Length: 194
Image (tube, rainbow, N blue to C red; front, side):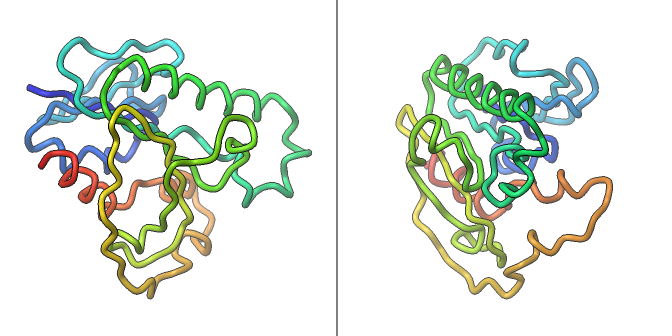
């Protein structure tokens, strides 16, 4: 069975469309240590800095490295955070690049508008969830490679435009804000499986 890798994926939203026909590995430090399998989704509790991809035919890889310390929307708090959180964020992004290039399959690395463009390069693609059927905005950047193709947009009116920005405080707010929109997940799956 072909394999899909999704790193920093606690919700497993990205792999849900793929899991009907592919074995999907979702790596996140919030998953229980080791591997837990539910149907074709394997949740891997691991830090990608110390994780090796499984053997097999890996056909797609997605990376959602933490953006808390690089996102320009939080720039006013940068000085108070210090250098170590920034260094760790850049390190996790760099490990995403290393693994993506090692896998030799289409990939994207996702982040919102962030300082990574200053440290590495500008993103290859920029979109909002409403461009792929989810009615809110959250400017999202993709750095891509190895034959990745961006699916054509099918925009909807963003009637819930500020859903992400106005999300109330809660223990799971960070996870909810970082969930991959299902419209985008479905579009990538359809475009790369046809």
